[in-house]
Image (cartoon, rainbow, N blue to C red; front, side, top):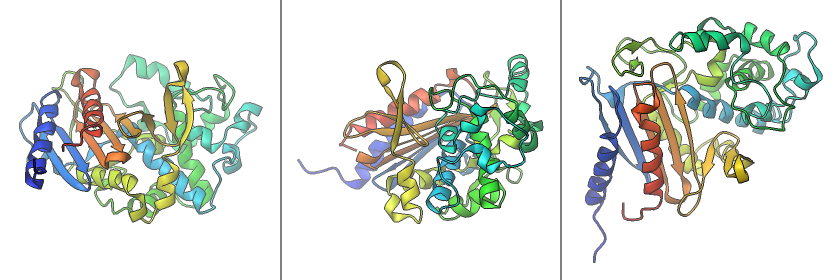
Length: 349
């Protein structure tokens, strides 16, 4: 039997994405796939189509921003601006006296969530519990972030346990700024976004009508865009789906980019955790076993949007998914993960 024609393969991929799209419950949904360098994008949702096509809107990535931040960290490490094993306090010289445990935290530990820092500063916890849709980050500037770090008591000694921390990743912003002598947005733009050709990726809102509008869990109530203030390095990136595919393709085909070595660095497994050490992490990504080799992925959410990025190097497959609704009932993350896992083991498309 002859091999399927490219047009037939494209139709199959479109059908697979359309089936997955139907499982996701959100006002606006985009699924964007790159497979052997060929792109397929489908979009839809429960809301009326916006004036600008959904695939042209810029979406909030939330914690997916951390992969951009850690890639920037790898770029700066490769260029000798800093070392992953530098102490955080080495690059924050104006700190008041801090505990011995805080002085032990390294940049690598911030990136891999092994610093011992809590998920968010403790002075944000009560507000987050009482008002889950109120953006406590908005008034939390970098100076306050650093001051809070100086008086924080760690939950465990640095390097001994994995504990997800927005607080820790946010600190990479002022640390890298101090080391490189430029603010975080400038560093990210000059060292990562521009070299990779990510012109549709920003750290703030665009002009009216170019940004997707998020919604609460009910899928109806709009939510204001996320202002991350001092937590910019942990969750402020926004991107159009085309840029998300370009970003994934850079990881899949790093040798074709000017950031070849840093892109490889962030894909190397660095720790295992959980029962029987089943969970593997690289410097920037979660890594799970799949057909032919591991797949790497990360997820993110803001107060009204969700995003998923994943790639499978062995099959040259990358998947980006965005949805303008908060909450697990949206089923976006599960659906995107299962789709990427299935495509990783399917040689017929």
